[in-house]
Image (cartoon, rainbow, N blue to C red):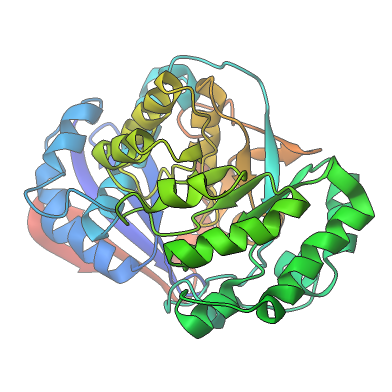
Length: 404
């Protein structure tokens, strides 16, 4: 079996998402996905990556992963790594289809049948424009499962609602606007009072039955993050995520030394060496690897094993797209040190179904991996013919680009 074509799919309604499909001469098609800068990643896929794929055996996943690292762009989660990640997921999907096995079996087999989830309290339009991660791109609106609006306006009721669905973890980010106002350099107690009140109201409503994760999006400097976490300690968050950027020298370890709250980090890192440095810093109590940003399942499975060797749990990241969630759940099913799986209720119960068929199954506070061969997920047929969908195809010759 040889790779004879690669195409990319962008859907106008979801401008940050990019789908990559890898075709073989035996008619199999593997599906991958990544998020952010979709047009730039698309161009890299066709101008740099696709010519290196043609004629390759898609089962040589490790070989292809290394060949796509390149001389520059091999570190971090930039365009090159995001492209390589999407291609990698498509190759694992192909291998599963070719062997008739779900991907978790190819990763060593299931260590459990289901994984507990937590709900990231985003809404259906969260980070849906191309402007990046910012308050201006939150897409806050009212409606069913618009959990970001609920986390702002009625956090206690939201916590109760989630518990009634069997979901025992929720992630909120009540301090981003304050961080943006000072570029993460300072805050007053008055400025963070509203955020603290949201945590207090959750504790008053459901006590410690809800694990509350506080997302900080790497927006703070070390002294301010340390101060903020000390202010949060009375509410006993399950973890504080990305209090500072992971690339600040010893930044996470300095913050961790100043608080009793567990630190979660890793979702924005790319490549195994970055996670090695993260774990060597001995600050992260949870590693939040993203399969569509780190280099794909090929890298993510090594990250999970590296964390296991250090006695650290993993909580795979998903706040991006349905293939990312499916890939994460295959990893979570196979890796014995996965603590919990991130999910977004507004996504899996909402817009994911407008793009794909199959995928991860979320019910009663747990998620299960598809048992179908490969990743167990495919694009809906109508997506490819939908108005506003852009398909770019590379076949055999690198110069043969067809815009459809």
